[in-house]
Length: 189
Image (cartoon, rainbow, N blue to C red; front, side, top):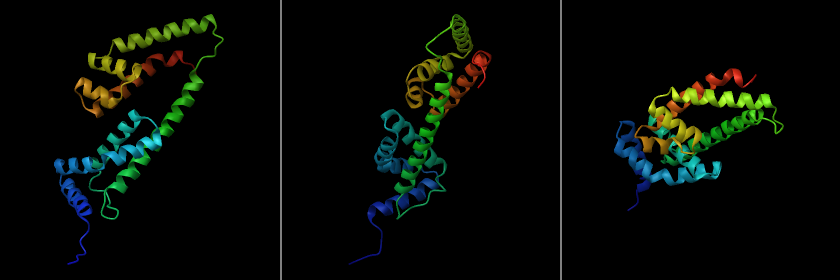
């Protein structure tokens, strides 16, 4: 007996997506479990580090949850949409990193440091310390772990018991605060 029904896996994706669109977190968890590895490896292939690939994978699934009603199945699978989203997120991160490196290169001092440069650096560091000292204890920990240290937002969120989004938003505000406190010492942009 033959049928024109899709394969079991494809039917499951369709069913899981339909349930996810109704807000079923368990169904979304099943989609995640089914597709997290290929999404991670797509991100890793494009970005080259495990830490960034984990962040991208997390961002892809957060985006998938938020845009669950907009996801289009391709050949009855959610995976192509997830992989395309992973590619876009990874490429955006690469572009952002490229801009950050350009800004960093412009901001790096020359190796011929004048005494006045040393004084400005000392004042700059004092302002950064003062600005960070005025932060809440949680924000101070986030500064140490994410800005000075090398924890990802996901790792910091787990360590401090807050959401990834809260860490991302707080770190962005911390960076803005430190930039504002040191703006006059950094010279023209």
